[in-house]
Image 1 (cartoon, one colour):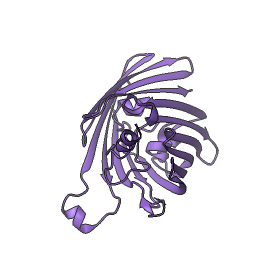
Image 2 (tube, one colour):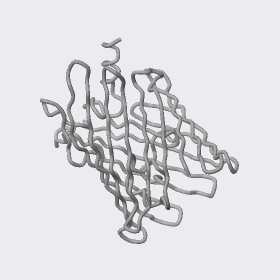
Image 3 (cartoon, rainbow, N blue to C red):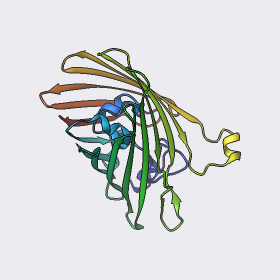
Length: 279
């Protein structure tokens, strides 16, 4: 079991050049939209996808989510996040845990976002990261994510996120963590229909030669959210490199939102995500 677990942990989930702290989609709503969430970010998942989006939250909001990647207990992903609006901006606190007894990643985050102008917002997330591997010890580092969100028109928004801006490293050999540039658009076509698209570019260990040789392929993600009726919302998503399909449903019950998402994988088994958000 141990060798199988390490094989899965080093499998290219998103960025094939790094293993530790690979960016994993979390939260059933974003997952159902294949992670095309950089310009949506209007709920408590904003610190993870684009911290600038926290300015869209008024008052307070909290979310908890859980999944087992490919149905394996040793690849358990859990997340909790709390947002609070203040007179200076929106403050976010979050915690994330991935793995099991043999391999474990823990992240504790502090995020802040505020408007720069009426239609331009900026946000920053600082994350304390700890990696622990059974029999090998543990190490810690700091990660920083920067986000920008712009209202292009009444129904169109543009988002930009830089993950691991500070180029955090782990371990004796200074292993570089994944770095990525994400750009997205979100179109609120009607009060019922939301369309989104993200482009992700791996920017870790960038060199002119690799860029010229196409060593950094761009990843496309597409998402759709449709409010079927007042308490029920349906979602669909498509992701390239690797090709994955996702879908899900959201149900509003009073002040709570219960979301479920299903995500396929071209080689491994399916993953089921569940989230609870309030208000």
